[in-house]
Length: 200
Image (cartoon, rainbow, N blue to C red; front, side):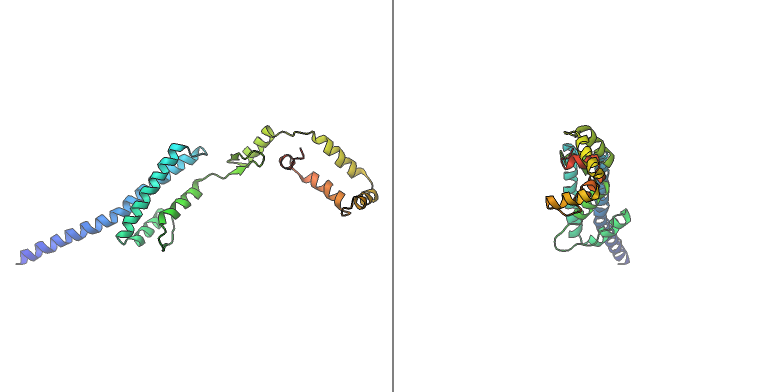
């Protein structure tokens, strides 16, 4: 009789261990898939742009992660998944109402690895650094008009007496400081801004 109880106890222990191990193995698999996703995302953003095959692979990985999260939720291990994510370095709060933790994790990783974007307001192209944007503007969007004409007008306005500037402002119906504002604004504009506003 004792042998029977011992065999039943050992068998139950093995079954409980297998059940516990299979449930927690889901979390281990999720974290491993997440590591693959993160590595693929880093490589995709390394060259600045995500091409079509990289995008397709990342999308498939998102589907896999979401399905694994559904299995984890079904096993009642959502808290354990959140703890595993914290140990991995991603702190995510529990989400209720049908939202997936995977969605927040992916948004976090994209925000972490996506290079910053600087957009050219003239043609819409984006660049990873401000220096690249500045270089692009100087090469591709050279002034269509000679800015020296504007410079001459501003210089002439600077050289005129103050009483004449005030009189000119009154005659034109503008604020008296209008001429001063033109001079100050022109001096503060960068070449990129002059191109953007169509002044160059």
